[in-house]
Image 1 (tube, rainbow, N blue to C red):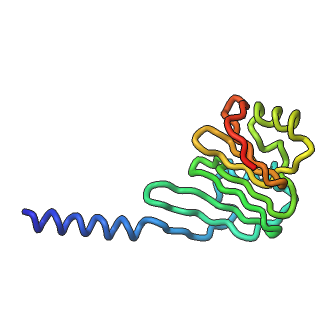
Image 2 (spheres, rainbow, N blue to C red; image 1 turned 90 degrees about the horizontal axis):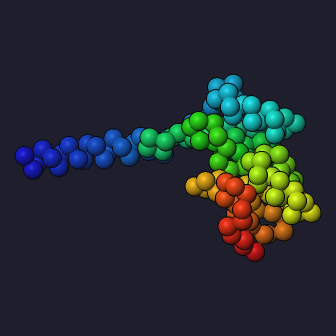
Image 3 (cartoon, one colour; image 1 turned 180 degrees about the vertical axis):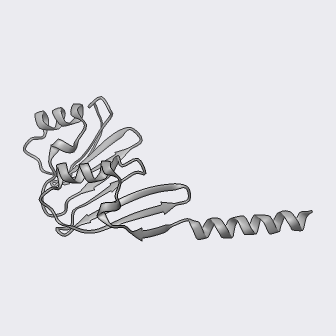
Length: 145
């Protein structure tokens, strides 16, 4: 019985490790509609260099890389997780409304380099090196320099 259990466990671990970490390129036309809409709204003037679907255990995500080096990552439902632009600033328009209002009011002289969603919070990295984290209501929960 013990040998059978150990054997089953080994098969499960081997199968699971083969499944984890599968990345594959994907045609832009095959991306979820929500992602294509986000790209059309916020990156309409940029050319897509590469799109991929990432599978990690039972989670699926997508990453789109543009020819200028900017990128966007999305969860399986097509919600953006992280958006980066190494050469130009990102538009505050992609931020949730309450956070966008706060950024426009208080940080309008700074350029946004990266935005990331983390557990209900949104972290914004500015080109100045400052990082500001907001909760879903637009309240600042952390600032780093």
